[in-house]
Image: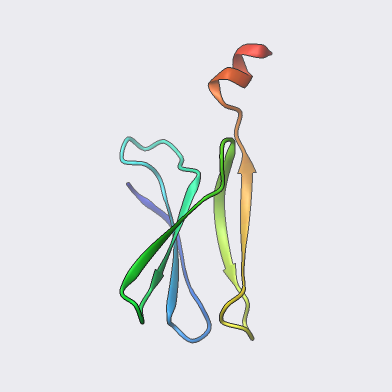
Amino acid sequence: GTIKNCQINSDGTKVSIIANQVNGAPSSNFYIYDTDLDNFMVHDLGTGKIPVAVYWDFKDKRFLGVQTEFVKTAAEKAKT
């Protein structure tokens, strides 16, 4: 899909990526690329939570925060 947000941690060893699905729909996943291991890790936030941005800590390269938005699922929309 299309990359929406990309951030690098303080020592440049990890890159966070938020991307839409191939069909353009938002995804509940965000990805961390580890440059040392040359490996992607997938983190799923679950149903209804969409990652908007990732923020790495300036002092400690291991810490990050993920800003999310809540999106109603089709089942929740049908109830209202």
